View: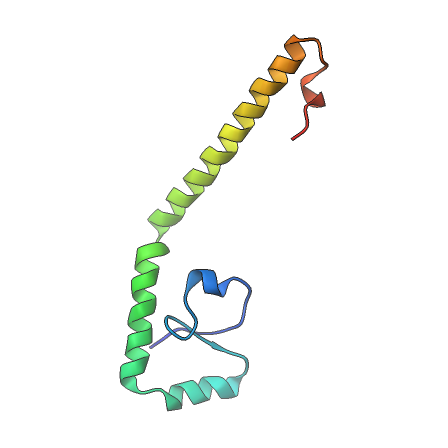
Length: 100
């Protein structure tokens, strides 16, 4: 069975509408999809969604993504700390005076 969802911001970044997920605006559209799509097409959409989810949206991939975000923020903070120490050592004021 394919995934059927209502519209929400960002869905296109997760799954491709019409190819990997079906988007509806009302219950009648759900009924239309369930009665109007062939079993072959429903299976194609479901398989495409499964392939994308396993390729891009697993727990392991989310952990890796969070690690990258953490490393990015940590490196920015480290760079800001080095700059702030440099300002403080030159007598240009306290560390808090450095803005992002």
